[in-house]
Image (cartoon, rainbow, N blue to C red; front, side, top):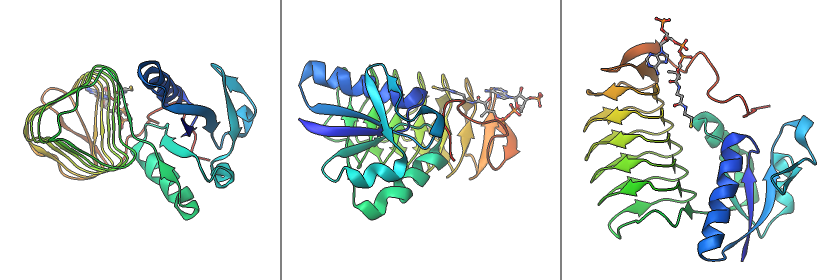
Length: 224
Ligand SMILES: CC(C)(COP(=O)(O)OP(=O)(O)OC[C@H]1O[C@@H](n2cnc3c(N)ncnc32)[C@H](O)[C@@H]1OP(=O)(O)O)[C@@H](O)C(=O)NCCC(=O)NCCS
């Protein structure tokens, strides 16, 4: 059993712990130590049986442990990795036992795949990307580092999702190129290439804003 610490104790962080529990039910693999989170108000709390052990920088106190990102905002994911890289951390890969991964798929460091997602063939999931539950990826789909694919998304074969993207729940992305730093609103249908660093939404998806979303992507994730 390897020690596991989840970075971020908000909604996604708690889902990640459940994912690790699910893996343990199938094959005992992870000794889940708890969370690290910079939110001062939750230090010492116990969430569904697992403690908030300290702040992100306290990762230095766990040299043998594996870490996994428990936040869904791609910018915050990158920030957390950058924050603790100097401690030379080990990163876990967490794949639900309900997911079948063909040997032709490439999975980077720190990747996660949630319950009942389905990857077909020759997909390339880059470092620290997270594929949430019930996602379908067609053949030759590429997902860039730190990108997050929300529940029920379907990505057409040969679709390319750049780095630091968030693809909102229930979206469909055709065989197009979605640039780095793009947010796709929930329930959107993306039928043509999307330029980098913008927010698109709707059916068909159109640019609603350049840069980042106006509203925070999660009420339970803090960046302080
Ligand atoms: C797109 C999104 C990121 C919001 O971005 P934002 O920059 O804060 O956008 P706003 O809320 O200011 O909305 C701007 C406009 O886009 C529209 N809009 C927002 N989200 C939309 C969506 N998903 N589909 C269609 N239109 C949408 C708003 O109605 C608004 O229209 P208006 O100007 O005519 O009033 C957010 O609505 C979204 O869809 N997030 C994904 C959530 C998700 O999938 N979570 C899963 C968690 S597991």
